[in-house]
Length: 343
Length: 132
Image (cartoon, rainbow over all chains, first blue to last red):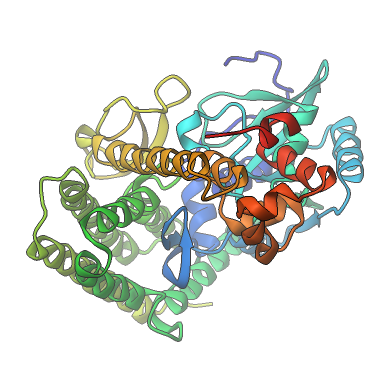
């Protein structure tokens, strides 16, 4: 869908991940031309791994390769000294009125939405997932102009369609959540460097020091342990579906490939230029390697859900691949934690 | 992943958009590239949908056989689980589970059924008269 009448000021940015994209596009709109998706992701300490215990999503394991929804935008804005306004609503009419008010002011705003009723998505992708993000940047006739960061082009939604996705229900219900940066001050390279260091440190903490065994690098081992048992415990069919779910969380649109690991590699490469520190771009290679290993494990898992691999030893081999990935990521984060980045 | 290794396997996204991926270019630097999809994840999505369709068919049979109420069928059809349906209707999961029984379903008021119908995007008539 091509719409030529984009407002002069707002430029659509296509990114791998929706929240990075909203962060990048909104901050660029406010004059931060240096902002890129990897930088937003890294400053926001976006990389993570967790298998949430006792929870199933779409009849599969609840696994995430990224930090919790909303955190990237919040942390990145905070590091850059940007004030953020957010609002949630219990009342649909109030949510619509507030959005219309911002649109009339000509301010692009981020909205959290559910994808199940998102009309411009292909049907195959419309599950009940409520932490998608898009930007509303104007109005044309009765339709809102929408910049969805995972899409190549801008699109539109009618008032009722937009309200419907803003008030999707279920876990992480958006409740009309709307957010936008305010009072953006000019940012020096020094502030960016501080933000990078803070982002890396927090990510090291999240991946290495988080308590419990189901999150951070240890979470990968936790999942490996589960995979070994799935074939006997769930039966081959359900076990295959579970593996399919891992692959989708890891490789589907929104991840940049390899469970966000390539995106983090790109961040460290960019960070290395800002910090004038070659060591960061060396460690970036470790994340590229981890991403490649995740993709190799996905190919192996696909062998199971395609019905080509059926033995317990195949499940064990997949689990072993995850154990190896954990070792690579653990070492990479340990290297990052040993760097004396100053500040 | 090297840029030349980026898969371009058409999938469900094909008519809608290509997706951004992070790849290494010839100089070993990261850049973004657009992908049409990857067979490995396409098959994961396909098998998830096969499972959904099987569940819908089983639910239809269960309604036809008088074991479950139409709410069970439409719940599967709309890919909902108890927390999601609870969100859309405002009923607690405990009550929804009861409403899945045909005997309880028969006695439900139109006011309650309207809430279910709205959540499922069907008319009250369709919901009440679904026979499987």
